[in-house]
Picture 1 (cartoon, one colour):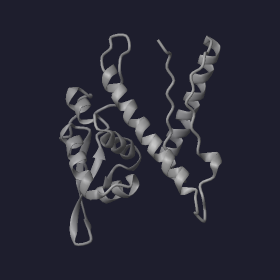
Picture 2 (picture 1 turned 45 degrees about the vertical axis):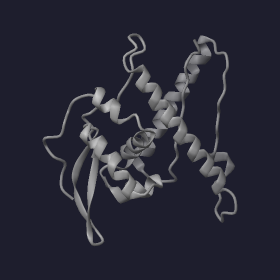
Picture 3 (picture 1 turned 90 degrees about the horizontal axis):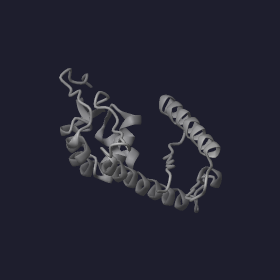
Picture 4 (picture 1 turned 180 degrees about the vertical axis):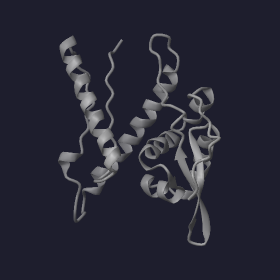
Length: 190
């Protein structure tokens, strides 16, 4: 495997990057790449449960947008396989709720993430049936609620979200154990 190109793009996400990420598949690949990169297409395919042949187009769109980098090649059987890395200089997109910049794109990313989470939830529930080592029900959870929170409760919810993020970051660092998709969205209803 070769080292990433020194001429890698270093700009923050703009219209080109947002456009590339409008696909739910690409957003899912982006989330996987945060954990796996650098990695080969076959490694991405194995982690995502998708065929490698169908991923090349998505990965190339992301690379052309500067989100991924071509990080070399490795021999896989009788053929060479491309290695992709996450362009960590491209930044993580955030919307600005005060100006509205990026809000529509952020909503599309949230929708893609929710669809992927529901798919994984369904697979996990299905995997419990007739499996020697079933997934324990206590590790599969789903919470979709609308509730009223006072300022103190909302602040407590945000502290819990921060703690969850600490756990997620630690899991990314260690890379051990079963993989989980974790979704947490909290926003006021206006």
